[in-house]
Length: 122
Image: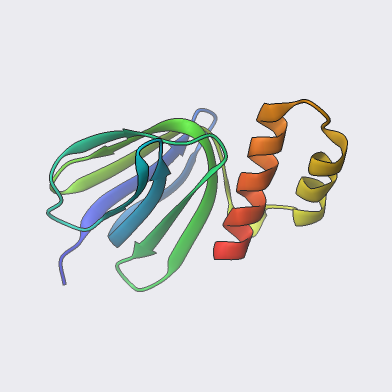
């Protein structure tokens, strides 16, 4: 089975790195699915989006990402996010509390919604 090297990196840390067979991400142009051998592309990630990675051994890694870029070559995918959280690390109740209390803070609302969507997709 064909594989590609994937790195999921946020400004403050590397979240995941390894071999994968599929990456899907929400970009400003729509959702994109990337498999090994994909044509090179550079995409801007949406605010409060979700990235899903299917690893070479079949595990599914899901992360909430907030802004950044997706860079694709024939053998690599690099996701550079402004901020990101793995679904397994997200406190759903805290994200829901942000939605209730954030008022007009559109950035906080987008981040909280992305975190909830990531947990739902995991």
